[in-house]
Amino acid sequence: MAQLDRAAYMRNAIYIAGWYTASTFLSIYNKQLFGDKYWNFKSPVGASALHNIIQFGLASLVIHVIAPHHFANFRSTFSFTDFQSGYLYYALPTAIGAAADVALSNTSLRYITLPAYIYVKNSTPIFVLLSSWALGLERITPRLIVIILVIFTGVCLAVKGEAVFTPYGMTLAFIASGFSGLRWSLTQLFMKWNARRGSSGGSALTTLYTFTPFMAIVLSMPR
Image 1 (cartoon, rainbow, N blue to C red):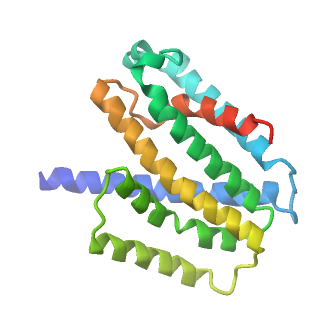
Image 2 (image 1 turned 180 degrees about the vertical axis):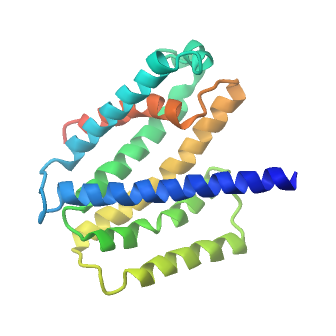
């Protein structure tokens, strides 16, 4: 059991390191694309909708063409028109929360620097904790609070003196952090629901396949 635990810790450490690496490069790319001193793309929400369409296309390609046998159970049990299964109850709120997070985050990069953006977005674990507690997924313990505050304080100290921002941009980023925390908790609820159904839909790829169409629709709505 100890060996399995070590293997699980190592696997999770690799996943977390990969997520932070990808997230850092994505933030740099978004700043270059949307920042008013760089490419200054005027429609961050529209670009985010296009990104979700591309993600859905790539996920569909893998699920239906490249590895259909691996996803045979998911393909046989999931349908976008199967409203009776209850998936909309989980998929729609998650997609709306994720769309709000992405749209507000990308828009905020037009008004604040990347260090300021990182400063605010690293409050996300606090919102993850609060939303997980509100949804019954996690218990708030003193140890967990201390760990999150230490991480948040460390990041704040790292960017101290580097952040240039406007109140409007910081407000957008802060609200995005709240939606980010909510989306991850809702995603966990969705994956648990899939596990109870015995579906193979709990993977990251099938989660993208399920959510990204709704995210693209939400982001494409007239404002």
